[in-house]
Amino acid sequence: MKHRHTPISAKFGAVLGHGPGQVPVYSSDYDTADDDEFPDRQSYRSVMDGVYLGHKWQCVELARRWLYLTRGYIFDDIVMAYDIFRLRQVRVIADQSVLPLQSIRNGARRPPEFGALLIWNEGGEFEVTGHVAVVTEIGDTWVRCIEQNVEDSVWREGETWSRQLPMRRTADGGYWVDCTFAGSQILGWMIQSDDASEAETDLEDDPALYAILRRHLPQATSIDRQWLDPTDPMQANYIKLVGGQALSADPADLTAYYCISETAMREVRRAANELHRMFLHATNLVLANDDVLARFNLPPALWPRIRQSWTNRRNEMITGRLDFAVRPDGIKAYEYNADSAACYMEAGFLHGRWAEAFGCIDGRDPAEDLHEALVEAWTDRSIDGLLHIMLDHDLEESYHAQFMHKAIEEAGIRCKIVHGVEELQWGHDGQVLDADGEPILWVWKTWAWETALDEIRHDLDDDAENLRLHRAIDRTTQPPRLVDVLLREEVMVFEPLWTLVTSNKAILPVVKQMFPSSRFLLNTAFELTDELRAGGYAAKPIVGRCGANIALYNRKEDVVAETAGKFDDRDTIYQELFRLPQVDGRNAQIQAFSVDGHFAGAGIRLDASLIITTDSDLLPLRVLPDAEFLAGQGS
Image (cartoon, one colour):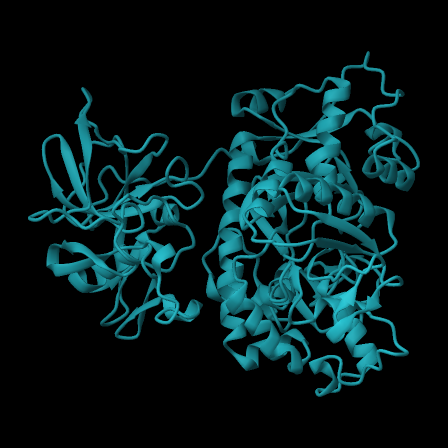
């Protein structure tokens, strides 16, 4: 995460200065990184003596490197800098022993000290990630620190610090360190010490804030009027699919909406951002290890293409969705749908329109900025021609495609919707053309990548040579297929091919193994273990969509819920059973939408069944201030 450049930023990797112990501080101006010196993601790994320190030259990397070089210990790998504030120990490299780490809240009566780590919360200059710096000097009214990935200018002669921050003492003896950037807040500081005085002992929120409430519009509200515009193709397709202008076929749901607290929404947002990073770390590990990649049941002939996609298009992901159980005893993620834009239209448009039409003013809409986030993401893509939106002949896919079409066009990109592949044709040099003869070079699709792979497996019988594409295709007699578009080297597809790995459920055991202490991950394994049996488990195909072919087992190994589908021939992973919370007889799943790798909105899906499927209802979700939410629980 790049935070700030200065007019005189030094080139990436240049030494800005040296902190105590002659530890160098480097420029993180990524725009000036030398592609020859840093050709791929692996070259950005900072490693000393076999110890991984972080991503060059991020703030966390400097903190870990300084501790390693001057103290001989490091803290565990984390996803976001603000997560350091939750750590309770550091690890001594020499003997792998652990030492206590104390979290001192900003404003406590224990001041920062030399070598302490200043921790910023997410927000302001440090949006999404937070920040960490190392305290190197303390005065009566200031604190000096060294840091990376903030300002990239070389220090002035004689300086041994990156930045000086104001510090004040309050009448009750508390020490407050303020950030010099507007909107950025320091959580506190971390001190390695046996002395736990003034240290945080409980970082947990009131469990009652993680419940989910069901509310209804006032009884006088008329809900039988028309509130959608049938002249808009997107809304017309929705109306046709559901058979009217309603969000649910259940009359009891016609006036219903659901509420969560600001605290719960904050944690869902935090979980989504952290997990996105975790899944990308895991994707990198999988693609670097043939034995692990083999578990994903992807054709080996495509492995080089997937790896090339990861190397070249690591930052090209537009959409993704994480599915959560939000309960008073924790927030847990079931999976990451990294190759899907399902439910975006309902959350990003439909529910806001419903609230406006019927005067629902409770709290706020957590997906009100989803459309704007998509516009911004597409604006940042360097698309220099026509983008084709490709989808099947399906009403739900149609309104998802039309929702995305609006964002793409608003971003200034010319785009065209293509239903099916029947009207595609061959052009010169094997190019695929649309019905108007325009070449297809940029694609956003509603089809999952696995759909294209199934076509490969079926048509080419997994022959390794034919999987190199087009070798066995007679273009004079065989029209273009989906795979002939999506796997052409010159065609740029969203989502990129590497998301085949990230969205495959085989990645769930990998992520859990990499981040065993994450409070958002469920225990998941490739084999059914005694530990999973003891608490109950879910059996899931590594490739599947819409909740198909999932079975839930209790601790007696009785089946408590299961779904049918077409993925019963796929390998299975086993995940700790963590049931969805029930709200008035319905099981509620919170969905977090990711755009460009960042949380961009949330929605809720409900079903009488324990397993959420494509037929489960999507109803409006509202976010209430904590005090109002707690007051509403008793009503």
